[in-house]
Length: 305
Figure (cartoon, rainbow, N blue to C red):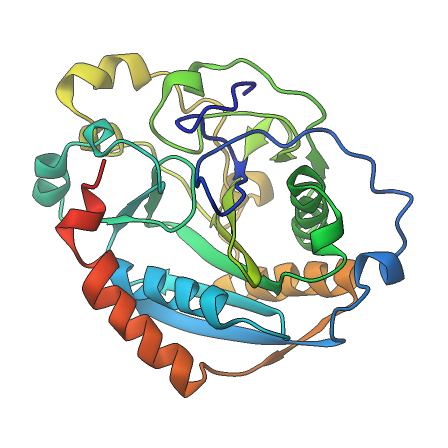
């Protein structure tokens, strides 16, 4: 994708924190930065949160609480969903989705704190990365930070035996007009072959960088189109040819814990941070509960646009 408008989404969307929208990652050359440069000012130890399934409001509340209260320690969180959930981007129009169809399919709906397009969380592993907003992250562009995080994801998938690459230029595909994240192919994306297996979105808070992402363990487009309004289904029908999954690429369905470990190792290798298993702090838990109740569980928030 090439547009930088607030309604334009892509696999790795970026934002300044003032206007949470979507934009493409520009090609950037970080090869000259060694690990010490990339991790300057970053503690050698980070926190790993392995969490089970929760509702959409709880998951979004936790991620925002982690970003809001982040000060010194990087956090990598893996989580699941207690029911199939469609998350839509901060600036995405709710009219892209048919709420009645979601209810009929027992698919929950939640609006994310980050940008991007809609993602159906059903056969995926969801991650969030929270980094203190300090050097080097304050010294590089958002495009560079996206490239850097992409390389971490790439390294992780490589340890599973996958041949992965970061796309160097945008491609025009049927997904350009889709309200869903995964059919859209853009520049600087993590690809297996010519297919997209990770969709992510980033936002910068006053003290932290938050990136949320979905890694497709498996993928079945059946039923996804039913979540659109009937008038939009035909146009989106051919948009999923460029969507892949780890199951398709590997030939088997990988264990969720195995993928978590691979991604964690990719971040540790590239960032020089050892992510040690931990838990939410009491103040993070309290704020997450408040956000889940007053924002992410509110229809005023979900249908704000």
